[in-house]
Amino acid sequence: MTTNTVAQGRKKTNAFAPLLMDVAVPIGSYYLFKSAFGMSTFAALAWSSVGPAVRTVWSVVKERKANGLAGLILVVNVVGLLLSFVAGDPRLMLAKDSAVSSTVGIGILVSVWLGRPMMTAGLKPFLVKGKADREAAWERLLSGGSVRSAAFLRAERVYSVVWGVVLLAECVVRLVGAYTVPVDTMVWLGSVVMVVAIGTGVVVSGGLAAGPMVGMIGAETGAETGAEGTAEGGGEREVEGHGRGQGMPALVAAK
Image (tube, rainbow, N blue to C red):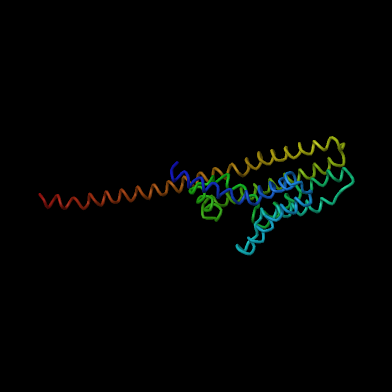
């Protein structure tokens, strides 16, 4: 294994680290506390909220900005804690599951409205793939330093909007189903609705946003490589030409 391979592997790990810390760890810890340690739903949600809470406060104090993903997971957990007190009516129990989807969907749409699309942090590692040239292209496109920046930023917003709308639509469908479909049917149908919603989000956001963003990153990377190659080629031609020009008087003098 070469040094470059190791370095590239580390960059990929670093790229996915925020996503793992803000999403995977809180969700995984919830199931760990609930299943492995036998905690109640309330206790498991409370303890799994510690990480997102610390990450949110740390980003505000240290970086002077809010950590969107960690903050969203924290809000979702708080909503889950509040809903854990809901009991009794089975239809209400089914309807409360849609509250999480609506919370996430509204949070994503608000982040777009504020000019900080929340889904960008989760999308970036998959598009950059831990490669330095793609990382540089991403930053140029996102900062407005490229002719493709306007289209890239528009696609970035579209990606988050698609997921926000899909999650809100899932919420509406599950809410309507909870009060119109037989309870026994809705118990399994809710999972089907969720899978269909996720599949729809992947296909639509990929076609309208992620796919074009991949193309723009590739074009930006190629343009940068081409510019460097042109500059190097020009430098070599200049040196060669300069060498020939300097050699002619010496040959004339020798004659």
